[in-house]
Image 1: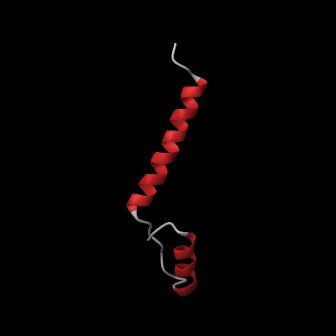
Image 2 (image 1 turned 90 degrees about the vertical axis):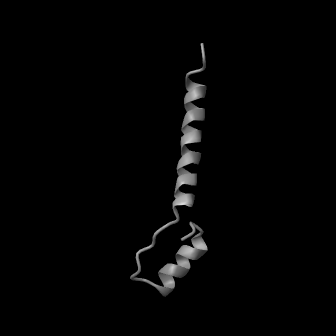
Length: 49
């Protein structure tokens, strides 16, 4: 499913015993954004010589 809080809330409300699985695309997108942030922070901490 999508990572939208509305979808998650609806699934929990109407299917309380169902296990939620998120789409790979959305999970990978979040991981890539987090890695970009880490790279940016590392670059600021250790500028090229």
